[in-house]
Length: 186
Length: 186
DNA sequence: TCGGTATCGATACCGCCGGTATCGAAATAT
DNA sequence: ATATTTCGATACCGGCGGTATCGATACCGA
Image (cartoon, rainbow over all chains, first blue to last red; front, side, top):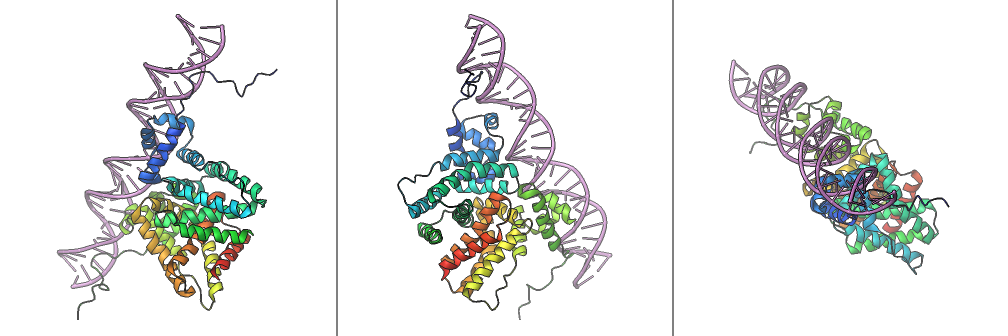
């Protein structure tokens, strides 16, 4: 048979498993200092890792933050829910994640960079948004453009509130957001 | 009577009226290069002005961009409209402004900086958001927290779309946004 | 046991950016 | 003419994203 080139471990010293440490240090640093002052040097120091190690794994600060967000959000638990419950759970899940320390500023920061950096925008769109878009398309049996609209409304609203007030949206307003979107969904 | 200290012209060389030139150059530069690469040096050069002149009038890059946005948005025309029309006109006005060259990236950029800079957040909230909030509170006869919620939804959605796609929201989706909010308003 | 290979931390470096300081020239009021 | 203030120009500082280099280290295969 042909050799299994994909699973063959490459030669040389293997990478140490510090991704989780780096992600944790990234959110911690962004939470404490904000996106701009969370420099790669500081993140590396907080993770107990050299800056070169970070740049060996992620091509830019924006890509690092995006990967960190993908790791932070993770999969949505949506088992055994009907249409309305799925939508409501997804929105509340997003609200809770954005409220976690550092996630909001990290999101907004990578967002700004993406607005004038097509390559970063591509990473952000495909790595972070698309997985949720596809899951919701399937779970809700809705066309792509409608799911994209719902994501814009939910995430945009939550991020705008955090940008203006510096704090995550209060529960009562999240309830209103859920109710508003559910009224359009059905 | 007490002298009119406010209207008395101060001594010395008066300021040259270059604010409009600076604002125009700011949006032009942000549109061409994005928020991060739109440096104060480049903006000053594009406006035909020295960098020191800019820092004499605005305390930071974020404050400059915010002032530029306040100037770009300006007053909403809302005369002779009923409740639903006022809300719809305000949303479409925001969508149109965010679609103008440079406005979207400038907004997102100052947004990111504001998320971890309380003083800039205060400027952004009071100078840009509050005027519209007050006008809408009066025109719609709605409490503050509801108007703030509507602003979060409308502006957040429009900005999120632009951040993910790099382009302003299409007209059909703006229609859907208006319809969704109107359904909650009444 | 011994090369080959790739990652590791440490360090130095580059270009650029936000912001400040300084200076002589120019513009106003008195 | 003098006082006052802004103007453009220039130089400067600290810090940041990103790159290059280097010896040390960890794994693999022979």
